[in-house]
Image (cartoon, rainbow, N blue to C red; front, side, top):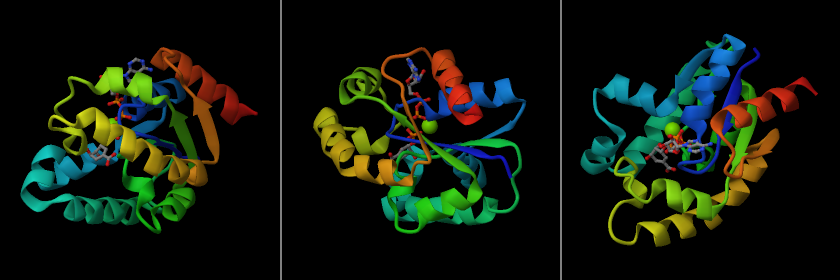
Length: 169
Ligand SMILES: Nc1ncnc2c1ncn2[C@@H]1O[C@H](COP(=O)(O)OP(=O)(O)O)[C@@H](O)[C@H]1O
Ligand SMILES: O=C(O)C1=C[C@@H](OP(=O)(O)O)[C@@H](O)[C@H](O)C1
Ligand SMILES: [Mg+2]
């Protein structure tokens, strides 16, 4: 199987680190947000706007089902909310080793303050929404993870090195 799955809060670096990790390992790379966007021909923002969050969550669950048993030597970066929905965390474990990229609220707030692509944080109360969601989700990430990487404000390549060290242990 040998798939690696990156989970964690929006902005923790799943997509950025995942791409670089895949390159280092000569693995394929798949991002569930991109997969869904390509399947529907619409951005995640547009899907939330037109169909609502619940519709997007169903697509995420469907995506894991579609991928199970089909991937090998692949780094999979998933959307930040995916491990929260009942059943998804268990399904991810069947897909490969689950790696949680932990990052503080402060680093995230700085990274995401001008972001316009994450519908759950849009609007004037973006930072408050982030704080509330962060606390709510933390236990789900902790429970879903096989491995936790404390990323702090490390450069993506250093996060990749940390992951490689941990999985070789
Ligand atoms: N380790 C890092 N250090 C600094 N900036 C980062 C790091 N990882 C990601 N970023 C930046 O933060 C933003 C969100 O990263 P992204 O990989 O899209 O996160 P995620 O997929 O977890 O939401 C991007 O602008 C990206 O360039
Ligand atoms: O945390 C979430 O609920 C979401 C995270 C996003 O992905 P990233 O974690 O890659 O930003 C994307 O799936 C969508 O905007 C919802
Ligand atoms: Mg991402």
